[in-house]
Length: 197
Image 1: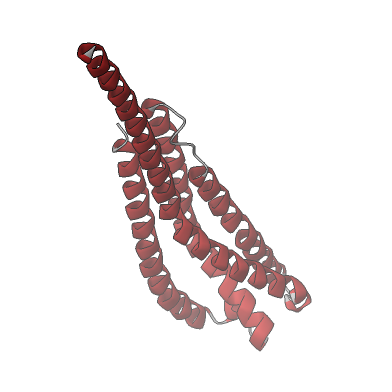
Image 2: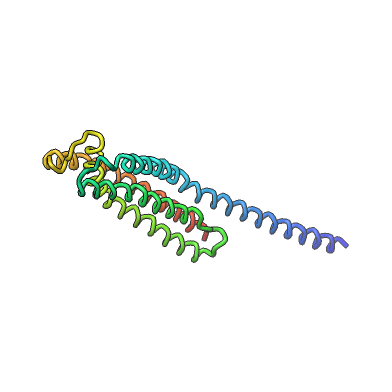
C-alpha cells in the first residue's frame, strides 16, 4: 500500500510540476510580448507628436497657399504639404505593423522572419525619409519665407543657400540621431525574439 501511495503522490507532484512549468512559460511569454511592444511604444508616441506638427504645417501652408504667387513656390508648397502628410503616415503604418506582430503565437522561425522583414521596411522608410527630408527642407524654407515674410528666397540665391546649409547641418545631425535610436530599438526587439528560442 505504501508503494501505491508513493506512486500516486509522485504522479500528482509530476502533474503539478508540469502545470507550474506551463504557467511559468505563459508568464514569460506574456512578459516578453509586453517588453516587445514597450520597445516601440515610446518611439510611436514621438512619431505621433511629429505627425501632429507635420499636419499642422501642412494645414498652415494650405490655408496660406494663395500667397505662393509663382509656379515654383506653389510647387514647393504642394510638395511640402504632400511630404508632411505622406511620410508620417508611412512611418506610423510601419510602426503599427511591427508592434502588432504576434511574436508569441508564431513559431520561432516565422516570428524572426516576419520581424526581420518589418524591421527592414521600417528602417528603409527611415533612410529614404532622411534623404527626402533634404528635399523637403529645400521646398519648405522658401515656402514659409514667402508666406511669413513675403520674401521670394529664389530671387536671393546666396541667402537661400546659406540658410539651407545651416538647416541641412542640423537636419543631418537630427536624422542621424533619430536613425540611431531606431536601429537600437529594433535591434533590442530582435534580441527579445531571439531569446525566445
